[in-house]
Structures are given as structure tokens and as C-alpha cells.
Length: 227
Image (cartoon, rainbow, N blue to C red; front, side):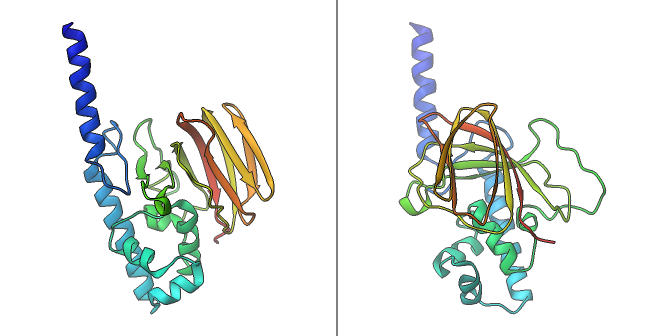
């Protein structure tokens, strides 16, 4: 009986923590992905984007016309209210003539960097509102390397009602580590399981999502086409 009561208290505590989460983000039990960490990432990315835009003498309207991202969303990104999905980061990088990795983490100029298990830079984005239901947590596997030509991530796909296709420059490679993933590229849709891999051109309309109500974990390597 005591064990059952302990489990019930633990479950209630977990529910309370979930209810306290921000609409645009989720956290996990990982020490890397705390609310403090998320706030720092929001502030860092938004500030770097604003500085890059102002340095080039561009307005939010200019960036909106170049990326297709509405001005209201751009304001929320710069004010650190939300983190944009990866596809938008690639578009922002191109619009500002920067590699997308600069916004995630500028890194330092050295020949080699190593990320040990559990030490990647974790960033979460999960919206409850329809316009924000990206449904994934992504962990950068090379945050300390400057001038990255590729962006490797461990991505956890959460069940979400996401149907909006993304289109941007570059190519993507995905290897399914755990769970089931549904991917659409152009007019073709495929179901991938653990151990399956896919490589596609990102300039084709594409969508990647969890195929079931369980989370899916993937290794994704993005090449944005930036020089």
C-alpha cells in the first residue's frame, strides 16, 4: 500500500510539473534540459538573430519577405518568447547570410570538438497551439564547433498534429534510432522503423513526424547548402 501511495504522489508531482510548462516548450528529466537552460537558449538565439539583422541594416519586414515567416513570429523569436523550428532557422540563416549553426551556438574556431554522451546542447520546442505544434526536442551534437558545414542532431519526435510541409535549401539525412517515423517528401510518404534511414533534398516539400502515439528518436544530419 505504501508503495502505491508513493507512486500516486510521484504521478501527481509529475502532472504538476507538466502543467507548469510554458506553452512553447517542454522539459525533460535530463539535467541538460532545465527551464533555466531553455530560457538561456531562447535569449541567446533571439539576441544573435536581432544583432545579425541590425548589423546588416535589415528590418523585420525585410526578413519576413525573404523567409516567408510572418513579422509577429519574428518579433517573438527576437524577444526570446519562442524558438523557431529547424526549417525556419535555415531560412533565417540564408536571409541573414549566416550559417544556421550560428543561431544555435556560434562555437569556437578549432579543428575538432567532442560531445560526450548526455552532454549535447538540448533545445526543446513543443507548442500546444495549432500554429506552434512542431512536436520535437532537438539536441545539437556539435555546439562547440564554429563554421559548421553540417548540423548533426539527436531529435525526439513527440506525437503532435503537424501537417505543414517545410521547404528550404540543402539536404537531410535521418537514421531512426527508436520508434516509428512517418516522412513525406514531395508526393511520396514512407513509414520508417528503428534501423531505417532516409536521405532527401530539403528543397522538396517535406514533413517528418512520429508515426504513433509513442515518441520517436532519430539521428538527423542537415546540410543547409551554406558556404
